[in-house]
Image (cartoon, rainbow, N blue to C red):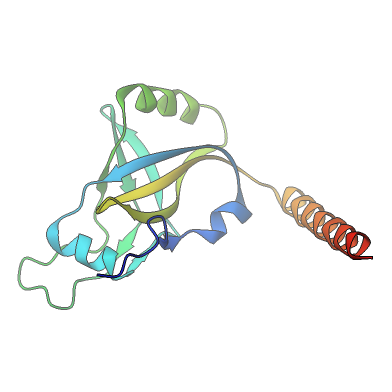
Length: 156
């Protein structure tokens, strides 16, 4: 049996790091039905429009699309349903307090398998303005250029 990379992401939300400044990350378990986990293992999940809410001291993931399982039958899952996230009570209380701050949201960053269970890396994020996005792109370009210069300087 061939072992795969344990934390190889099945889905990533690349747009989240562009649109938001990630303040803090949390690893959460994902409550899925039988056909959902099969679709997730096949990589048929999209996190692009996903977000999480705290309702009744529980965290719910909304806006995540998991495609129907092709070999499923009449018991196939609903594609856009709310899914419960498994977090510790202290983490939920902390997230609930942080979400009350202006401009904060809770977004999924990536989904991966860990010991056979689906995990989602969630990020507490603050929205960026256009000038913030330009600033971060400029900073990345400067860092890339510095690394290139250091590499050329060290090889001489």
